[in-house]
Amino acid sequence: MTYREAEEYILEIPKFTKKNDAVHTKTFLKYLGNPQEDLKVIHVAGTNGKGSVCAYLDGMLRSEEKRTGLFTSPHLVKINERIAIDGEPVDDGRFTRLFENVLRAVRAMEESGLSHPTFFEFLLGMALCAFRESGVEYAVLETGLGGRLDATSAVEPPLACVITSIGYDHMQYLGDTLPEIAAEKAGIIRPGVPVFYAASSEESDRVIENTAEKNGSFCKKIGKDAYEILGIEDKHIAFSCFSDYYGNTTWKLNNTGIYQPGNAMLAMEVMRYLFRENARTARWREALSELKWAGRMEEVLPGVYVDGAHNISAVEAFLQSIPQDEHGNIILFSAVKDKEYEKMAAALCRGMRAEAYVVTHIEDPRGTRSEQLGDIFRKYTDSPVIVRENVKDALLWVLENRESRRVYCLGSLYLTGMIKELIQEVKSDAELRRRVKEV
Image 1 (cartoon, rainbow, N blue to C red):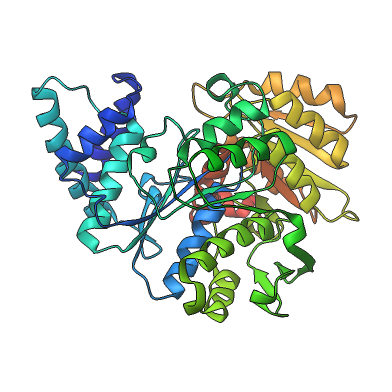
Image 2: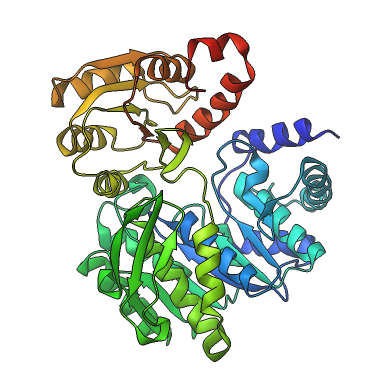
């Protein structure tokens, strides 16, 4: 079997399977030989910041000379990105071999009358098998959706449970209120397992605290009073910690998102718990300053940034990260149908004065029509709204017309992945390079 055939099979899974419960996932793992056994798992849920916290944890664990496995979602360009060993995604050959091994177990399940694993279950199984054969010690697992019913919750007990900021997203599955959403995220909490969470709102914080108390779990909240942002310089954001444990040193992140110090502090507090007096914080600082997490305020070309903000709370955090004295930007935006894209559009128009808003359609059945997005943006701004039918045309318009303006692309992680892939295409195409001088 080829890598392409394996990828196509996995992408087709949602068309012929249904959501399974935790019992099914645990049975699936038994068919795989329980690859999760002996792993030291850190389980991460939340609305925004999950991927960044996972990446920070993975980087600091590696700085402690630990062998790590990282399971995240979604991927931006290649599905391999979801499974990383020691900071590197598995290559195509290994991905294909893992797929074949898992598929054999799935066929045995089906012969016994059990249902096929879901898309997410299948990839989780591949990741855990990769971790086992690589001798991984610490595995950082990011939930796919929610927490209580997520397939990753079948891997227990974890060493620590981590909950990032809570906001409005996936309400059709998780509930319409912050307490309801927080309850689903807090579903990852296990008896006696310590919980670390990012302060969000009083009502969602209370749900997490109460759930931890019911499970007899130590619970620590990390709020904005845990650190101070010192400034942004040379594409790094610097911060200090209000704790004697970390001393008076300055910490730097290879990112300009104003929300990232909070994500880093959350990961740092987990590390502090895990390593206690044996912690080597100087190594953590170095690891964090060098780590790059794709798609989060990432500069993909000089002055062109992609950000994975895909819900209203993430867009508001993005707006706080833009320099207040910056004017004349261009926004490139798209979103999928099940997101609150009108609220995101309104926030973008009210929160900054862009020179132009370019809207487009993500080439996916879930993508919102570009004309519809154009009509929405025109309700909230008198700046030009440019409508392009596909992401490639939108990106080329931006690159050809931006002059010296900064460009921010956001609204969907699918958009982020497509733009990153298209930029590589532009760089390798002589005709497109002639059209776009900066590339």
